[in-house]
Length: 217
Image 1 (cartoon, rainbow, N blue to C red):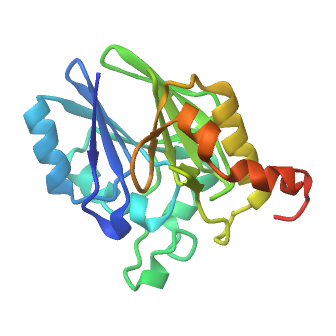
Image 2: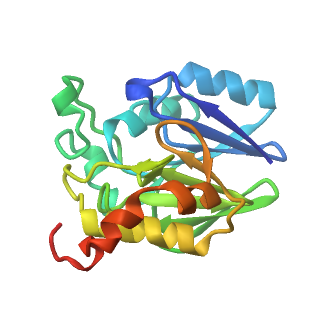
């Protein structure tokens, strides 16, 4: 299994191409379609799934373009984000002056769902907080966290569906249940590890002040 990162799209969001035995999965779709098509050709791989970690514009921008170029690919998103990808207000594209409304997803995801490609199986983890249907994706020592968890930081909670309480709980869950050697691939910024985030991420300071027990969203 190989993981390739691209960061040349809108708002410097990260996109990850995972390849195993001639099949591939794309996590988020914020870089130009040509970039992904060229990478697939170089890897001699067929794209099976596009998985959106959440519905915000910088992570979904090229999803429909890719589906036009690759009509057999399946677009997957958590069920709580199914309407937002089609809504220019909820996906924030309207506010950037470039409104987009994606076509409906091909598969709606929930906690614990698995997707198999090549010789590997990935697992969907529902990690709300940045958005209601935010997900993280675990596969063979790698954890793709979207805008839930960054190196030394975490995602904003002031958009539709955001919640400080839920986000901090999601981070706690990811770090408590993952192996310390697991590589963390975030939706923005550079890679980290679970062990590094356990030791240095300041989220624990917020938890210690009781935010995780608050009803305040």
